[in-house]
Length: 150
Image (cartoon, rainbow, N blue to C red):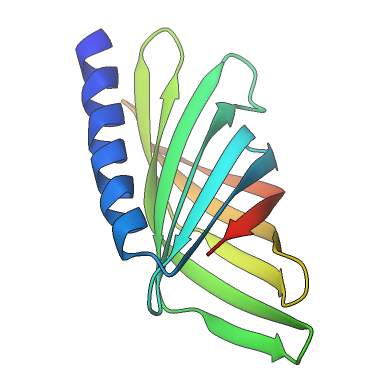
């Protein structure tokens, strides 16, 4: 089990390191509900990568890691002060109970970006296919805030 965790974390860091190198902008902050912990988002030309780790809101799941690739973002609203956009994507998650469980994520997110203040407020709704001996679907959600760096 320890080797599986280390392999997953190593792959995630290598993938995110490549994303940071290509990123135009990135944000780091907190995420609440599922999971409650740290969130990072790396924007590239038209796509983005979102990763989070923290404590799950589900009873019996003490720790959760997740990462998503977000397809080109759709502008809802834009003016001189702010921008609101919608994104969707594909990702994965790993939960640590007594053993490791994996799931596929289909995130739908709304992001608010201010042009005056380097903050990103976000809300996401995510159907998850839990890949267990009896696969099942869950519906997860989260909200959070990130500080933006250039």
